[in-house]
Image (cartoon, rainbow, N blue to C red; front, side, top):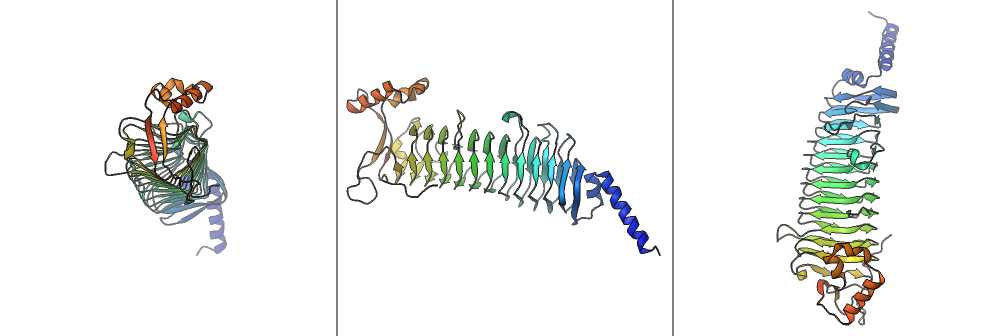
Length: 407
């Protein structure tokens, strides 16, 4: 029988040898499936692969350095947890999607990690019923088009992305990934905060999206729910707080959309039975509050507050504006009264294109909007119209005050 002190020395020798090696893959290879592998503080070499159920977490500060090659950590198994690590120094290939974590499986948990100096952040490919939360993600300090996505979902469903701190990335790209929930995330200083492609029934709520070129874009994504987000300073020339393209049955509710080139951009629903609904949003200090393009109709706007926008609403396209429903919105340029004191204006609020038709039909004239000459033309058009103005919208019950108070 081998004495206990010999076994203890042997175990100490093996642990010191592993620590001296500092290869993350060596630690993973020695762990049995289902093991909770707690890494001592230090720097470990990557890239590494996990192909079995495993919990990988840190004792102290643990850095996984990819050595500038490939993806730092790749997961191809169910029931894997990655917690409390710092992952950095991935490869540079956009084609190979080099990044911090590439994950494929179900019931994964990726939380409390720092992912920095990587091309892509976290990529979920064919991942289901998993959680990504409380991670700090940064790409590289290069032009936004040269960065990778901070978060990338591809054919993944039933996942939750919660309370992550994401900045200095290209986009968050969600492709062919329906029924995921994105809540409580902060996304700053990037190109597109959220970019949805064919990702139906996604829920985006309680996120702070600040100083991105565009806040949320949804293309061919039916049943979107976008609610209680703060979308600020999306001032790229072609950017928007929320942009919906070929997307039907969307609900945009309770958001604060402030200081954007376009607060909301949308075309009309593809299916005539569906509607795009805007309820209880604050739309303020934007160049254009809402911009509808293409055929008119199919929109419902209720209880929104429009304040200090250069143009509250712009509609470009054919159709009857009465196919849109406007009710109970608050307008800072409403010129009516509330003599009966019910909180609603006594007459409908109508927005018409007077001199605005000049820049609508000749976009280059937009530069002169609010100049003295166009202000004079607008006044003269209203005083003595020399061309019939077109109706943009009619709110049948304009509110005298906003329905809710905003911070």
